[in-house]
Image (cartoon, rainbow, N blue to C red; front, side):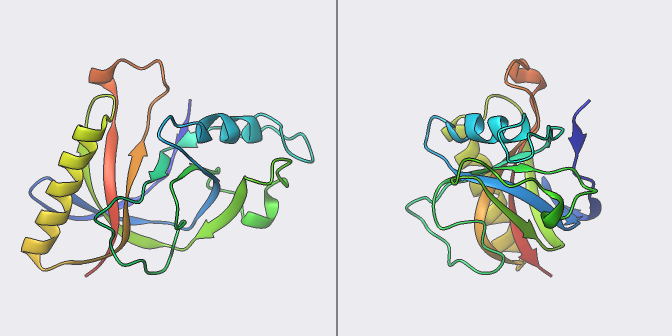
Length: 176
């Protein structure tokens, strides 16, 4: 079974849920619209690394896409380009991770932070993601809650999971 990042729910407003996430170690790669980053990351966790270590899959898979309506970047910054990240197992530190053989794979650590999220089901098509993003950002603005960084797409299910069973979220770091 896939490990899911543990978080603490700290509140809700309508469809927006506020969560406190722990420190997370990520393997991150550049990604295009076809999600080719998935293959690079999957290769890394299945042994394409210096020690040939297999790393268990964790959820969610996090995608950052810069859009025309850019939001001012603040710390922590995942990237200034389109990226995809796999969350490494929760008991691992950055220094525990094997060195990638592919130089496009970067290992980084995100500090503990609070994230606002909106959940939705389906295949996470652009229209669905944009609708969730708009709901999230509008809701935060109406509530007077400050966000920072770019919204991210978080996907929790294997590619073969039927759309009606898929869990997706759009999230953004907040300060309350």
